[in-house]
Length: 148
Image 1 (cartoon, helix red, strand yellow):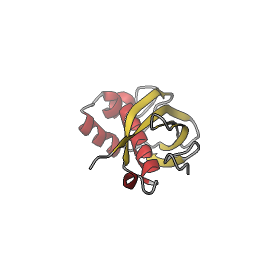
Image 2 (cartoon, helix red, strand yellow; image 1 turned 180 degrees about the vertical axis):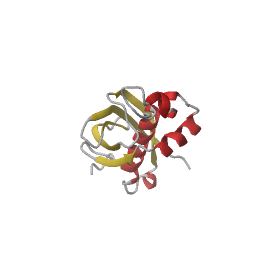
Image 3 (cartoon, helix red, strand yellow; image 1 turned 90 degrees about the vertical axis):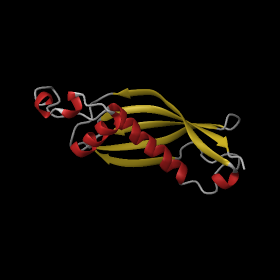
Image 4 (cartoon, one colour; image 1 turned 180 degrees about the horizontal axis):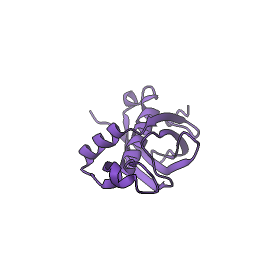
């Protein structure tokens, strides 16, 4: 590990998430998004998808889990006086709907480290159980000083 920074290019986390009706229902309650695309089997059974689809924001929430995992694997981070915060997700694209029953595999890989600005940029790829790319994004983490 670079002595000047915690993450290095190539560090990665791979997580698997199951898209279930229960997860979609819970996310709808949290987000307030009760769109029929997510909630109505009656309507969606007549759509090209044939079933309810996951919220895009749910897929992004699972991206956040990935960034937390890559950081929590680092030892001594907070003892060194810094903690990471998310500066956001760029170039988020939903390429295919995430359907009830899908198993999504998230790969979060550090692409660049900016020592001067104390940032890392990571690429996220989300694929379903058949290997189809469902979603992509870039994530920026900023490492900020702790005081006291």
